[in-house]
Image (tube, rainbow, N blue to C red):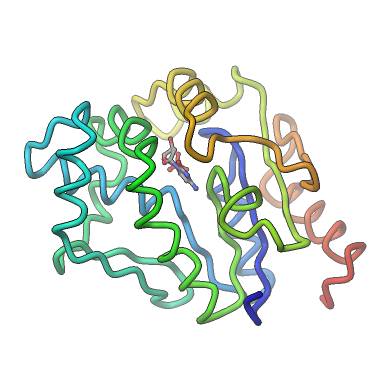
Length: 215
Ligand code: DC
């Protein structure tokens, strides 16, 4: 059991997880860890190497051969691959299209999950993703599943000027065999469709207090 506190925020694409997780982390003075960014970074890396993402063995070989460093910088997670920082490419169209395929490969998850656990050894964290409450930190008592209606989520992505087939990504993320997107049985579900980011953060803070987090 890690000695630091872990708040798990899971949910589908464009549910508001990232904005909420960041604002919550700032409110609590915790670090913010975006696990989706780790899968995106690895996806960017294999695409850079012209690896066919439909060939799991080739993807695994490229990932195993690379040096992956995850660290907390100014209370934010950052991933370096072979000393390169892919941050500005994480939402490229080709990464959006391929990330669900790459993240469905069990060995890729097996490589990245320990990196996520390492981050929580360094600080209290708010960690967002798909399987944080169900697989990465099933023992944390602080788990939230953030959702919003499909229409609202599509609009949110459009407002960000992004081309992201979120319905297809959700289908892939929910139906894969390895650590699919699920609502952990002990997660608190919050529908953000009609809430502001501040409204969601306030609601999570209220529930964290109820659960005994000293805040
Ligand atoms: O949160 P995001 O949309 O940036 O995540 C990108 C993809 O990474 C998502 O489609 C599925 C995958 N992912 C995952 O499989 N497990 C996580 N904990 C986080 C993300």
